[in-house]
View 1: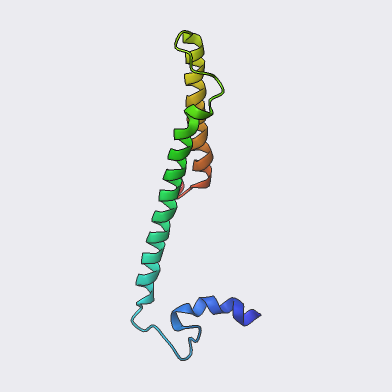
View 2: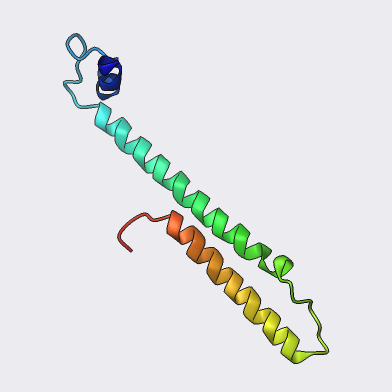
Amino acid sequence: MPMMALNHLYTYAGGDPLRRIDPDGRVWGYVAVAAIVAGSVAAAMCIITVYDCVRQCPQRCPIPKDDSDPEQDNQRIRWIEKCKADCVKAVGGICKFGPW
């Protein structure tokens, strides 16, 4: 079991670092590309998730749209804006990519 846990450290050498080596350091290029792709996919998923949540806010609003009652329309607009802010806050908490 301990050898299986260490096996992932030597993936670049096919799990056998004594017989296979990476003298040119080529593996780091693949690691960098994989990290960039993974980060891009994660960022895209966060953007899509926020967009989808914000887009659904008007349909989820419990206050019916009534053009004849300005106060009700104002309440509806405030509810939708709060829903949008909650979407950004909720997903933003999950999708942290840096110190900001």
